[in-house]
Length: 481
Image 1: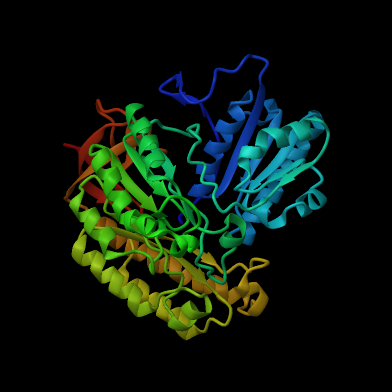
Image 2: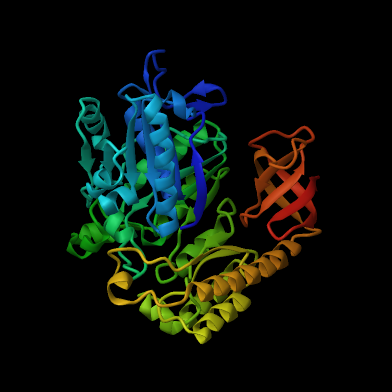
């Protein structure tokens, strides 16, 4: 899954100036301030949290100093992400000194990984809640308000929050996340997600369609189907994916897989753009590619993490695909979806990685020429198989150099891909004002590349045909036609 920089939530209950999801709070209502870190799923989860607590009288605020309750939704995928959270807790501690009644809660994967230990390590923390326990937040907050610490980090085999209508946070009123699966069964040796989010389970397709129809009725123009591994989506009536073999013959016969759900969504809302993230190479089927080619409202973009170009390293990572199988899948994508954008996740410096392994990664990148990517140095995560069995033995200087080489090559390839658009006309959904100019709009084309162009008389939410005149390695520059 792609990762985003941390952001604090602003205007959470607003859609074009109207409150849409949470009740209008009384002026004396308590206020919560939420920060989210890490993957898109965490940002989606924060919307669920805001909805749950909004129903018991908590309004959201984007002013830390006004808050009665601070919640930080955490990521454990890398050590740096956890360090960032701990630094933020220091900031919250300084605020708490001037507001002794302020309560601080830690949510998400870091909460699940550390559990009650968090209360010992960070004295400022009053509340620790894992990703599957958010429905218990009202009672846990009551415990905290009564002066008692509260912890709930029990992993669920069924919880999908399919019955919760999320409060759209950080919304532009145009794009939204829709979670379809939770958890992961893949057990990559470097990854903490299976231990913090539990086994894979999928959400009832009817609830997914209902949520998307609701978003369309409120003017949203694009949704992203979200999960740790969307291609593993499998609805047969509920329960973890691993229990599918125990399902009845009728359940197996009527089961809905990801490509079928994707088609259902595209047909239900033909004028709404559809994206999905994240895919896992061993689980993506050609059926998904054919559905994408059939429905023009499904964006031609796939985030397809590979992590390494070396078969030896892939095996050590317990990735269930080889370099050759990954290349074969890329070839299918290029054949079925010739103009598809593809992005990657890549790790440098995995235990025992040799220079040859690193060169294999660079050569794979040369073959694919990804549009963009998310690239990181290996970070040992406590409790994972890699941490238990493999020494983190690549010198920091080598990790950094290899990462720099990967990043430099990706920048070269990103520029190669953006140059391909120069002179062409692309469809852009306007999402926001450009960060660099109040005279320009910013949006994305179907391949997920950012496009910037003069505002003229267009507005946020418009689909605009833009002729690309120039580019950088990350942005397309053009004019509406």
